[in-house]
Image (cartoon, rainbow, N blue to C red):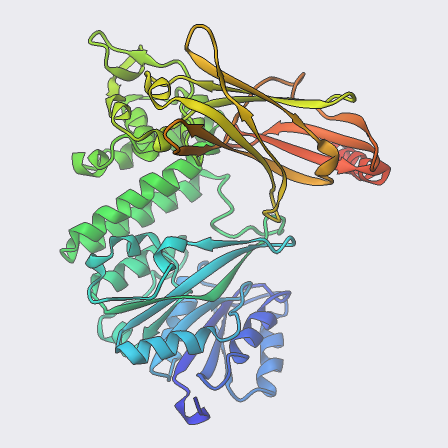
Amino acid sequence: MTPHQAKVSVVVIGYDDAAHVADAVRSALAQGPAVREVVAVDDRSTDGSAALLDALADGEPRLRVIHRPANSGGCGSPRNDGIDAATAPYVMFLDSDDVLPPGAVEALLRSAEAHHVQVAAGLCVRRELPSGREVPWERALYARPALISHPSRRPRLAHDTLCVNKLYRTDFLREHGIRFPEGRHPYEDFVFTARVLAAAPRIVLIPDTVYVWHVRRAADRLSISLDRAGIDNWRARTEANRAAHEILLGAGEKRLARAVRAKFLDHELRMYTRELELRTPDYRSAWWDLTRAYLSTFDAADLGVDPAAPGRLVARVILARPAPRDLPRLKELAARPARLLPPYARDGDGTPVWSADLPEVSLEHLLDRPARLLPAAVDAELRPRARGTRLRLRLHELYGRMAEAGPTAVDVEFVHREEGRVGLSGTAPLVADRHGGSWSAETPVELSALGAGVWDLRLSVRFRDGTSRHTSAHALGGPGLLRRRAVPDAHHGVLLVQPYRTHAGALGLRTASGWRGMSEVVSRRLRRLLH
């Protein structure tokens, strides 16, 4: 590709992000001759971002800076300014705290031109900082190249609500009047994506990584997707989903509209349900009312497709309860993978139901679900001891389905939370209790092999036909079991160990090795107490 073939405008938006915006702009300029211009839109920053961008533009002819006269309060207005200012045939978007990986623009442009499409999309990865661990976004959608003649042929497209991992024909956006919602409109990309899909573009998907989404959980100002503690965030999310659904339904795209609701059930509803116990009673009450009101607009088909799926079960319980109830059990059901904790009730006809006082929520679909997809419940107890730590596991029966599948063993892994590496692994046989209601396993855990870090316990229950069910474990015990202990260690002198319960109720493990590690833990604890 030669310079005169530059065909892409990259729109970078930012507000009070002087620490990162220059890196974002440079990553766009570094894409090479495919980029005709970088349009940086500053949303009336007060931290020096505007002057920083102007200084960069002085030495870079491809960089144009737009200064908004007033802060918009959101991301939509500055992106719309970028669309209006773009002079290239194609446009893509970049947030000030993220970056484009090398070759991203060229890969998207090459595919867009080769297939004569209006939209080219690639893989986005969420990079956790400071660890650098990367998690692909909608990995299955971008597993292989694909040319899609109409969005309805791939309803999963509605699940990828990001606008930043895509290249758009500029004239396509302008011809169809496709813009972002103006002003403060959280989750504006949900609405924008629905408008794009409603215009029925030809789309090409490529497996290349084209966008790096930086996740800074310790930032002073959390991103919208991380700042979920206030009820306004949930209200904005449901309203954005509602708007996306209405846009697609109004365009006659019923399959895509239903996919928007499927995404809400499987992703948003489960994510916020997992965190519900952490919130105040007032928040929980308001959340429950908002959620019931929104779910009441769903029809039977929205909830009836795969009715045993965890998100749909959560929705049915919420609709059946006028006020928050069963939160611990709902939290476990919303986990990934889902866990359905006892009790396992039946109605008068013997049909599995949610509970004795909520028999209208039937669980009979679990009777036909493959064992590898059942919401298996495994209790876990980890007792660090100087003379050896052991992990005890108990798999619950589930309406006779576990006995039918015949659990034989459980594979155990402790996986580093940030790095994704396996620190310990092993296999333990599962032994049925004499009453037939559960299976137990026990295995030693060599804590000294782990070293320092935060570890997730991952399990895989093996069945006699060779299939298996991947799951996590429900953390047993109160403060007595889930407390920090110091145990002697041959490698580090001492190891500080704390089993803990995650937001989703699973068993996790924190370890700090050596006296230095212990000192750091104690110092952090003191700082929290003083704060």
